[in-house]
Image (cartoon, one colour):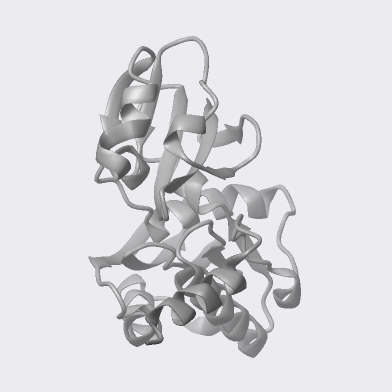
Length: 229
């Protein structure tokens, strides 16, 4: 199986090629450079893996949640490449890809959503895969639902946001926390490979972003209004 994966939902930009379990990846914390880097990196990792575009089985993409512009960019790039190659798309939760890096069986992934909130989801290890425990949410750390019985392993910038408010809220059940963790395209590809085997690939036009915030457009308008004299 050969997959090309994109993940640009956070300040990190990454692109990966998955070839029968082996991953070739480019990753960099590169705010505001995602559009500049993503497609050139795709050519580089394909060359490193010795894979031509015509040999790809599908395009994988981190569908969010995350930064609005980053999520939108990843979906647009994945759709464009998939349409050009006549390949399906495998949308993968950015939070699930992040959680794949954490240790332990019970994992919490959290990304700083700004505006006093975090994107949050809980997962249970299921072999090489992860099973979501409930919905992905965007919530102030103080309002996050307690995950229940320990131990849990936390990862992501959401644990460092608001002076570590989420980490403090879950302190009694957290066995480990990695507040600097960021999602990677290699992990998007690993989860996408499992999804491909389950027959979950979709037509490019059916790949949808997960913003979680319903008022993204309104928020941008409000921010512009605040800048006016």
